[in-house]
Length: 326
Image 1 (spheres, rainbow, N blue to C red):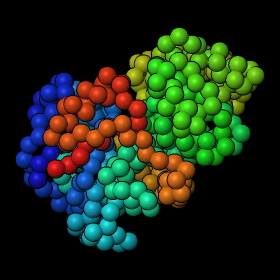
Image 2: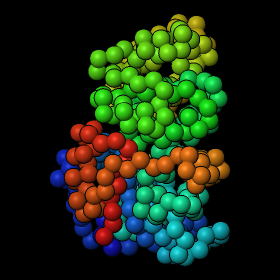
Image 3: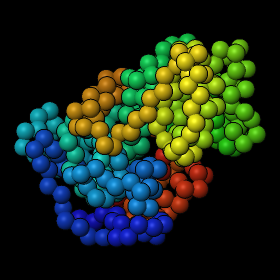
């Protein structure tokens, strides 16, 4: 088969479409012939040499894909050759085939084509696990989503609205904020010329956000704590704004607030399987019912993954950038 390899870390040009050995499904795994993969910022870090795959994972980038099962490994039940699926991966989505633990497979939702399903696994699992399984967003609460026009952000807006929350988003352009509004966002904040703390306070009559989904990390830490409501929950899922920040513990104590920080890639198989099962139970019916949809900015041929990486690095996209396997 062919896959995107990274012979040497570097810029987008470091991605090389090359012939590599076919993967073999191990115990409890299936082999998926990939129709499409999707670009995540973790892939950019891996390309730059800053985010190695976990031990035993595929060396090729790609944290999600969609396709068709072409072989079953020993001990797999509940799936059959020919099933159309999408999958949460530890790596290997930028390839024509990938071996996937059966617990990380999801059926393609009813009414959705197999290609667009590649835009779902990483964002659905990230949002559901952080906003709902950890932060326990409830109907009537306020959710603040940073980077509302990203793949994660577009999913968080839709799921927040689906459960009856009020959604506040930040984004950097008028056009991106308009797209967030189309998905249901209630309060739009341009972080370039507005203070999200003040805007959240205004929108909630001073109460603050009950849950914040943050991709920035250190840069927003202090302001996120100030924007939290009493008993608020801050879920950190990224470090685009740095890794070290100063935390006012007094402010956190006064609000009886909580901070969580998670990543998906290195979690044990059982934890990933539990998240995937929860997504299948709670999110998939919303997708099949048309209440939640993948937001795809563009499709790029997989051999030209460098172009897709440049698009994501420049942050000119809304939603996901897909890689279409030849």
